[in-house]
Length: 441
Image: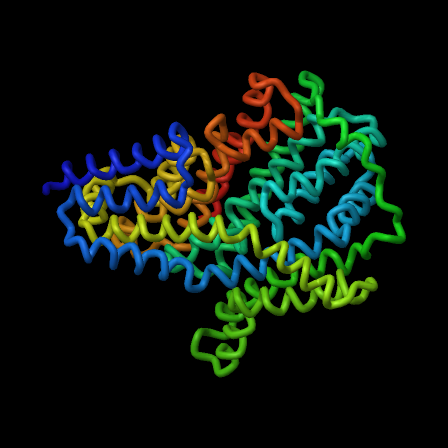
């Protein structure tokens, strides 16, 4: 089969994923596996080779990712049950002043988004958002958009989030670099698409949130953890992973100490140490016992199963693309365009985000499409490509994105208004993320 035939097979496979997940409502895990089988049959792969590719792809992606996601989920759960998010918000608003509440909520979303998932962050922070808006006398939209964008930006571009971590592993990028570059690139994007954009549109739209959200009473001060200890617990694993990268730059890869530094700064070890720290600072030190912490940990790890399956199936899809010869066809077509690889990675992720809806599926599918091209650009840091994919996946959220409906449910906005606020703000963040990345690179 020639290159054009291979590309047609790829396009049909992507269309199949979209059709099955959106129209037929088949679970993404099953849809991706069916797409793998379709590619294998269409390209005349040996039947046993199709199964081997699927097995290799799932195992390769989940080998390192599974413990990272489980440990990260436990840290996020500890912050949730301890009231850490509320403590961060209160302190930031007190320090920055009520007039800058929209900026404070963006920072809170940005920080809280590091250990928790996008949807979990919304559930955590929305009751707080309404309390803060009433107290500050500000528009819910003006404060809500910055918070949501802060959460989403970090969700897409900063490990240890599932998609961001999977992209880094898929591209064989240094996770410490991805974290560092992601935080640097994501902050300007979140600032413009969040507080600045939110202030422009805040008075033009209204929210109709669920009544149970408005009735939540603030947690008494004495029941919340301290600001410093909460911030330390959230940032601790990131500091360890980034420090590994910094030491590698300053000492060199062959320094005798790098063996120990690489061990402590590896994602699994950094998050394992962060779990122990969270158990103490947000749990045992505040009167909880290990039996309670065990139950919270189980609740945190349970929801990871579905996410891990989707990511594993995406890894299988990527592996089948390579083994079927489609990867080579992608390489020959895309390299003939002579596009900056960062722009290419952003475009692929943005198109997949618009088509598929979910940021996680869009990002991991983008890895399979971009990976074959990277050998043509040996000077490009894979960490920058990982951030480009994440930036592309931030934007263009609309009706096929589960997160879109999640925001709609909690904001209680009309569909048209949600497009003019949430969808537009995600797109602004995505485009600015690309521009900032190109300047940074």
